[in-house]
Length: 337
Image 1 (cartoon, rainbow, N blue to C red):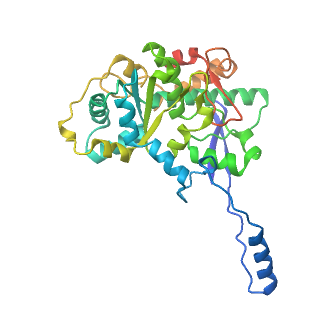
Image 2: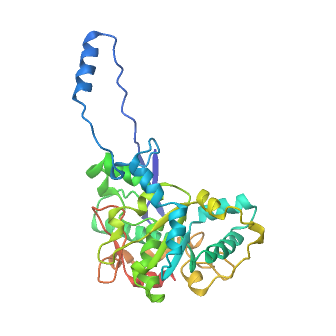
Image 3: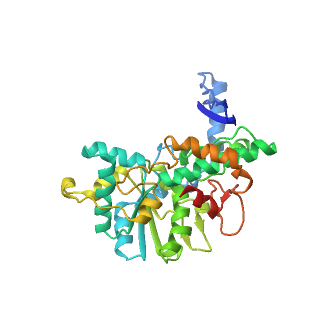
């Protein structure tokens, strides 16, 4: 059961409940008639090929395509890419992974951010960012889209999920029945990919395909999300996110490195700006997220960004599915910085 709260007014919420139930399993009778039906059904089955595009990210099987994906999104491929000498390499760290690592090493999240920067800098990474910046933009985009739908009589309720497994399930199992209700905002990971490749690249004087962007995420499904065709730009010849490694894989990368011996590096101005972190590595005061989330939503309600955050040249595509695309302008980024 999925429970979704949607703001109908700034003072009230409407709860929608979506029940997804497994269809009743059929039981094969011991009668010969039922047995004959079963045999005829089996006889009609044909050999099929399952590719990565068919994967529902359910972890129920391991195909050769999935094996190829894991190899492409592995720590060895990450190190190989960094050793190839990209013009700039950027790592985006999720707060969930940082919290897990902090627990593992008995450190604070701030210490994890600073020590990981030291480690990644040693293997060729230029900047270490925080995906909460992407979460802030995704929040504003989702609120803006809801306002647009609500004020124009669009399709409601609006469902949203940052889980690529759920998005994949909805697309492949329910299709047009559920897709019109889904928000077109990208997940925080893919928002960060857009920010890094299309905006941060300009500040670093790099072409989008000259930046190698990897993320550290808590879930293997994020690897599937990063490889989606709709997150590859043919014009720029670049994926929004080139590689995804999990929290466990970060521990593999660290290997025999003595955690306590790692220095706590200071954050550069760009890292602070594109991470919503202050110089100490803490979530900046006044940033969205936490209590600032309400301020972000109020900003959308008051300014009706849903009327101006779409389309236009130089905008950022924020679509989780090939069937829809939501854009946000550079102005929105300025409001979030």
